[in-house]
Length: 315
Ligand code: UDP
Ligand code: MG
Image 1 (cartoon, rainbow, N blue to C red):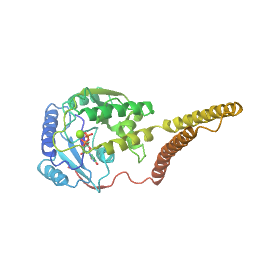
Image 2 (image 1 turned 90 degrees about the vertical axis):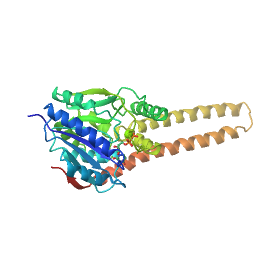
Image 3 (image 1 turned 45 degrees about the horizontal axis):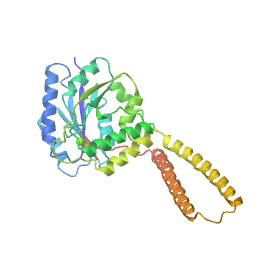
Image 4 (image 1 turned 60 degrees about the horizontal axis):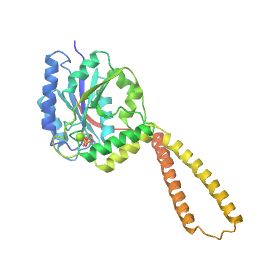
């Protein structure tokens, strides 16, 4: 008997793409079932992340027409990462393997075959990696690649050009369930689970319809989230910076003393002003970074639920 596959898809205001996404995914799963690669208990699970449009109605409709579609309705909008985790944790008991992907068909669904093959070959984690970003706008590509570089520098280990298109086996999911943090950055957490992993390359297409749910502001906060949830290197950099500035001030002190004995008059109003502002700025940035971590600690100690499920339809 072949293993059960669940495809988990977080959806936020995706009524424009759902009809096409569901159609293509169904074809894909049906063909895999026919080839006896996956069990006929396999499902496509849409997670409705508090959409304001007809997304949930559409999901319910799909489910009533065909039991291959399941639906998970969150009590409110919690963001992509939380919605994805909600989906993964909900289907965990029923599935042997789970593939997560976006609703907008940017992730090539033909990579699913290869992911499943690698699962049977003994991989617990299979990362979908973009072979190129040709179809992305220059801005998106530039900011995204810059983001990965900074992340690596800051000590957050991730798989380059991998987003959230991946296969996880049941035991990898059970491993992931052990990570209790509320500040979620899944693509950084999954490598920490370990187990045998592999990558599958695919070409990332354009969004099928509708617009990106990740504007620049969300991307920036996602980047900060990524770095601070995985590493404390920024704090260490600040300590280094503090030492550097302290040494600089000693050098300036020596310089001023020498100038004094040489009989130079009071000068340097400019340097004074500049250094006050520069140091003030650095202190504020540093406080901000430290504050970021303090905020994280605060949120973690509260241990609020990462998602609340209103309804799970699955037969
Ligand atoms: N998404 C979500 N909750 C949100 C924002 C986005 O579940 O608050 C989902 C969205 O429906 C999509 C996926 O996350 O399936 C990725 O979003 P999008 O395609 O807009 O991001 P981009 O590809 O532009 O980075
Ligand atoms: Mg997209």
